[in-house]
Amino acid sequence: MEKLIITACICGAEVTKENNPAVPYTVEEIAREAKSAYDAGAAIIHLHVRTDDGTPTQDVNRFKECMDAIKAVCPDVIIQPSTGGATGMSNDERLQPITLNPEMATLDCGTCNFGGDEIFVNTENMIKDFGEKMIARNIKPEVEVFDKGMIDMAIRLNKKGYIKSPMHFDFVMGVNGGISGEPRDLLFMVESIPQGSTWTVSGVGRFEYPMVTMGILMGGHVRVGFEDNVYLEKGVLAKSNGEMVEKVVRIAKELGRQVATPAEARKILGLSE
Image (cartoon, rainbow, N blue to C red; front, side):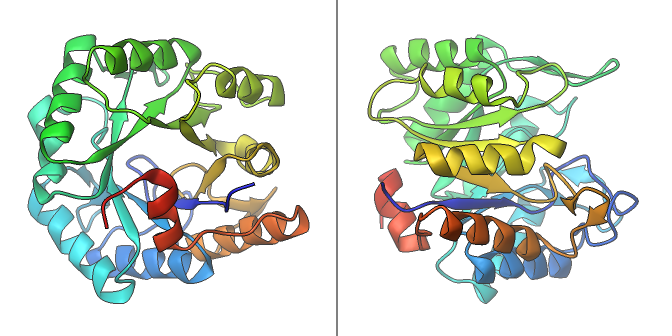
């Protein structure tokens, strides 16, 4: 079984310091949380950015500040900016970080209800546009899917040339409006992707560590961090993203799975050196 790539989603766009005081907002806090995750064993930092008051933003200058600060403290880590941003943002707004030419970026492959009146919109034409722009910049997309139909969309657009092979998927499990985070659901998702694809699983809330364990056992890769869950265990807030990554490393060790370095993750994912 190949080595395990751990992605740390260090802040997201929705979770706040009211949920957990360690959630990072400032450039310095984001660099601190990235380093804590990297030092613990994360090869990829999945990056949203905030203004200093915690407001989510896709501003390219803020992304550059944060990415430079992360690279200063963990030079070889893979930084994966989000093009999802936050609900209500325009396409151009969401795409700003790809102008910095990161190795990877996320590509959401469907529209999803996020609760109440919030809808995370990704039309087919939007996905095509995002995909073409990533291909033009040689950016590897992490195909974000919240339900099985989004896998089918990605496969169709792959055949039409909007997403390159081999694809790398992130199964986001347990989001309100998306697929649940039960073992049967992850099995269904994994069995639905093309042969030769790689995949990561992200369990939201209480689904995080069960999905981590399943992902490790099934030979996939895993994501943890404050974006998805703020607890280390039930009722115990995580002190840092690094503490959550440490837990994943312990589980992987118990299950006999070695953890990939950033260089090894690049090789597994087919990223340019």
